[in-house]
Image 1 (cartoon, rainbow, N blue to C red):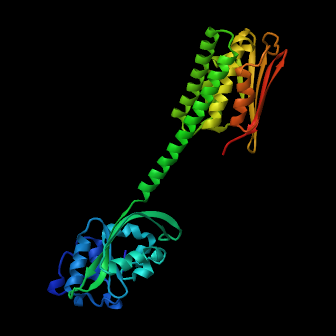
Image 2: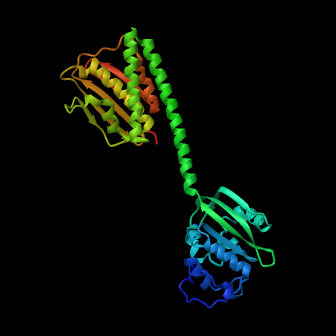
Image 3: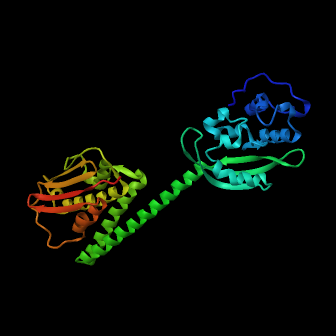
Length: 361
């Protein structure tokens, strides 16, 4: 606020006596030493200037006005926050001085208003340094000419609304919409691959029906996971939800690795891999035998990510007679999420799956 706030009220002529005490800026304007400005002492202000100030102070929207040869600034209480740290010395300053940081942007609009034509701008972008650093701000505002007692343009009034938060919120929403569209495309692509590959590798219609249904449900669970968890998820949470009933407290699947958050897309890929590995283990591998177990370990070094699925205690393992969709999923599709490589090794002692890649930012 102006340093003159709090001074003793001065005696004013009858024509200038109105609600100066209606707000902090009314009192600040009344007590300011205007003799130091081109406007001169307040006792000598014209009826037009006093009327404009009356309108300014009665305006509940953020508003300021500029009057005289140097476009000397006055403003109301609602406008003060717009000034930031400039507010302490803004009253009575020239427009070009107090808003030097945006002067080149608004000068054409100022000239238009001073020529007698009002202006209106929606969501105009202005880089302000009102708090000592650059800020990207957006404003919806109008400039209207002000006239003196002789009908000559003597200044302008600015009614403004700071819409920075609105613009930023809409921008975030657009980013979210783009990300959603990207995810939908990925889902459709993976779904198409699941269906076509499962049908191609099935030996019967019933096998195709069961395989496609189960894998699409796994994909749905993986995608639904991030409706709840957002743009990233803890790796242990992904594992817990993907492995489900296999994590029954019996230590048949032992997890070991550092705390880590995965991007949504990489978490979806990992969830699909874990579902496929655990399903096969329950049917043919370690989880199909009473003493069988799985060690699921992972490590991180920089942005390098390594994950191992190692089965032990199950029936002797043999390589599949033909490469099915499950093998393609864990060896090709899932590694693509990590820009890396995947490999399943069919050691007689147990399946060993290795995933090596990079973590997303």
